[in-house]
Image (cartoon, rainbow, N blue to C red; front, side, top):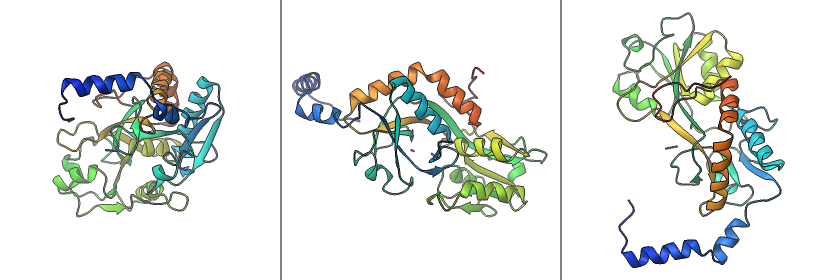
Length: 283
């Protein structure tokens, strides 16, 4: 998942700040030296299927390979479970230089421009009565047993629509090396223990495409009340590394078609920037 006003300054301080930015000092030089010039160093979860995997099979691994190739550098990974302490023990510890997938606006990192917009999805049996449900206010969900990852934004919509009582929660923070709520949810759906599953699209879409051909994935892009269910995904870098961020922004812009192709092959539901419709991706 996927997450989630500057006070006015007087003219003199603004000019002073601008001059300070335009004339890099020792601090700026020191910050730029933290980024490797010999390898594309990626911070990643070793078992975050289908996004990042230690065997290189995740779609974020493919994106890392694409970016590294554009830089003519090898990829080097620092592996750590994406849970409490992930950013502190990887990126902030200078063990690596970029996190491939990070929600726009997250305060722990500096975000690049986004390379993907996606949304939470509803997954149901392809031949079942919920296959075409695309809003959580649909009356067909009234008596449905819905799997939901606890604490995620769709839970608020479920509560608003009276769907919580019959829902089945799955844990949000787990070590994916030993536990996979997404796989558990989809197994329960196929076994008939739940009637539908709601999960982050870049997780649910690829898992269904790869392992669950009898299920269908519908992006939840028609909700009109908050919280929003679509998010722009960026790459995360250390704060203060503006040169590195701009370099990555340029790489994303020049390789967007390749990134889209990787995501589409994986089964990620890719949306337009405003999250209102599916993005057309060249095959």
